[in-house]
Length: 187
Image (cartoon, rainbow, N blue to C red):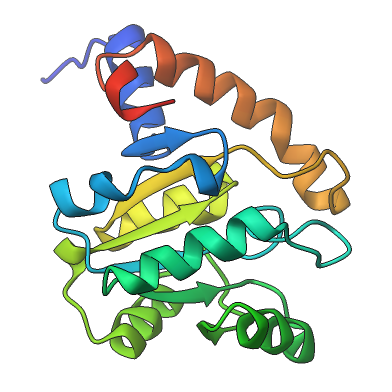
């Protein structure tokens, strides 16, 4: 007979690790370009809603300039959005000079696989940047790419996202208390 003794602290930590980002920054334009070089990142997948644009689908000029600099450094970029609103995703992608995929159904892997193929890069050279643990970060971790969490652009959100935010805050608190968190990679 095998008796399993449940180690609550260790097992709960392991359970939450799937939601931990590789890196985190306050906003997209705070991410240093050197991070991509250091991590050998040649392609970036971006979430759109509340990562690049607010709920009115507006972005600030700093984001546009930051993306322009990223392209100058030969980093490939694309939007991977769960939004089914094709025309909106296409419009934002065109304005920001990015490739795009919509209705991605993150965290499922097939959207990430399509983005990887669209960018024509290997997993080890790709990072996803997003504002949600349960879609962007968990999906990227499941797919095997690096992940970067940013804070949501604004507080106004879709009701389904609002429900998840308190749980995300709890997980982020655990992440910051864990050994996986380092101040150098999280600003």
